[in-house]
Amino acid sequence: MAEEMLLRGGWTNAGKVVRIGDTVRRPQCPTSAATHAVLDHLERVGFPGAPRFLGVDDSGREVLSFIVGEAAIAPFAEHVLTDDALVSVAELLRAYHEAMASFDPAGHAWPPAVPPAFRDGTISHNDPNLDNVIFSKGRAVALVDFDLAGPGSAVWDVACAARLWAPLRHPRDTPEQLHEQSLARLRIFVDAYGLPERDRARVADAVLHAHEWCYAIVRSAVADGHETFGRIWHDGGREHAERTGRWIAAHREQMRAALDTAAGEQAGECDAAAIPSDSRLGGRGGTGTRYSRG
Ligand SMILES: Nc1ncnc2c1ncn2[C@@H]1O[C@H](COP(=O)(O)OP(=O)(O)O)[C@@H](O)[C@H]1O
Ligand SMILES: [Mg+2]
Image (cartoon, rainbow, N blue to C red):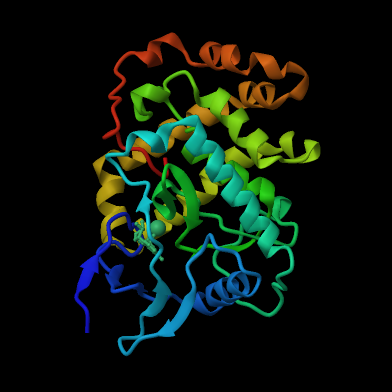
């Protein structure tokens, strides 16, 4: 058999996701059957932006097709942080939701539910973290890691993705080249996705809930003794998460304003005004900055 190559970028399954030839092997989890139904559906409808589920190997690991390209992992390739890349992620997410529109979610055991207000029958990805997006030639071409996919909504996924990709967080936790651009990039993302008007008004709330939801999962993993999450949590991750939560809560109105179509042309100015001047000090910046999940 071909050699196992460890794949970088994992969190929940860090150190356990490997490539063998054209396949990826990952540990299964209690809700893997639902995840496999999602991947099978995506294959049936011909969606190119997700791995194919190929079965289970002798070690009980799921076997997926390997997607050629590069995951968005620090230190980031220059193109990953561009607005063009951001647009391509939004377009990929939209295409995924369109592909899932014909999926019947009944009868599956799903992972932790998103808040009821953000469930509308859509099976959202729910974890569009940077390292779960594969790029090719500067464009996002596929989502991977569907372990958290479950009943949610487009607005939920858009909020999850914008939170991570804009990113919506304190400048000190943001790569330097994206300073003062968070709110403008939020708008670019939502515009590129083409979110309907009624959902645009809910994005800011969804971002706050998405942050809390994500960190409830992380906290529970830490409490269960998960090694990677525990290490990151105790090595500044907790403060990072709290800082992000405070930033999001403090910028709710600015996020709303940035997405207000009537005030559309002002999104860039709005961003600069939204970032307290004291927080521009101490930016760690650079493409090596910790830049995920927070
Ligand atoms: N099907 C795939 N094709 C190509 N790369 C993949 C695939 N699945 C995972 N990867 C790579 O492996 C990394 C870890 O896999 P992932 O499933 O995201 O683990 P975790 O559950 O720990 O987050 C990803 O960040 C990505 O770089
Ligand atoms: Mg992952």
